Image (cartoon, rainbow, N blue to C red; front, side):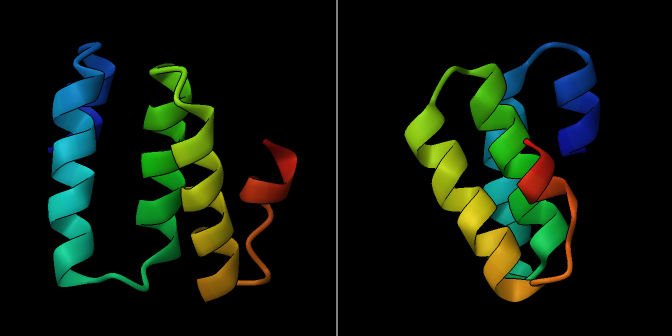
Length: 68
């Protein structure tokens, strides 16, 4: 659902959906990465960095956060 909102340009709804998903699976690094991407689109760098750090914490081998 979050990716659908994001593709429609509704970043705020996407963020809310990613947060809901994290309640069910907080250690899911891909969700943290996607949430960071939404924060970047919203120009919220501080929150994006927090989410990228969590993505790396839960999956140190994840390449994407290092590329952003």
